[in-house]
Amino acid sequence: MSPIFEWLFGVYSEYETYQIVLEAVAVSFGLISALCSMRNSVWVYPTGIISTTIFVYLLWQWELLGDMIINGYYFVMSVYGWYVWTRKVAPGQYTPISWMKLRDRKTALGIFLGTLVFIYLVYESFSKWTSWTAYVDTLTTAFFFAGMWLLARRKVEHWLFLLIGNIISVPLYFYKGYTLSSLLYVVFVIISIFGFIAWKKIYNKNLQPA
Image 1 (cartoon, rainbow, N blue to C red):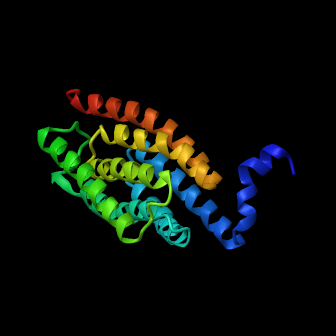
Image 2: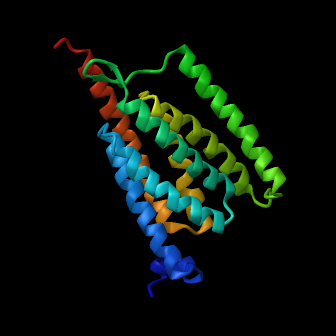
């Protein structure tokens, strides 16, 4: 085995085969979900539900509470977002892509700060402040919570929240030893950038008179 391969994937020698398979499946559906989101496709939600359900199970086994809560929350937001995206706001018109208004900013900030407090209490209750990763995990959870809510509301800025969370998650997951997930977040960083650009174009296109 090459040193590079051992450096990247050696940690998987400690995992059960079914855990590796499940992570690979979850990563695949997570990637599909992100691509659907970039294309403004409602399929972001059913594929995301599959991915997050698997990750909730794996992260519970790995005792990564913050990450597990992120995925559990995303499951709830997927159901909510699926409803919002398919709800008609006018005959033949569904919830459109839009920019955040003052009310959205206040709600997103409230979710962000509330998440920091909530995750802190969770880690405190389970005595999980055993590594610096717990503090970083709390921060990324707050960004993802706010970003996922904004995604469900079809706000362009959700890509910026997810971009920050994805950038932080790349080295975080690699440090934890979850190479496949770390590589997935590298892809998520790229998708977040192009997704933001794509949604801006869709928004501007929708402003054009028919």
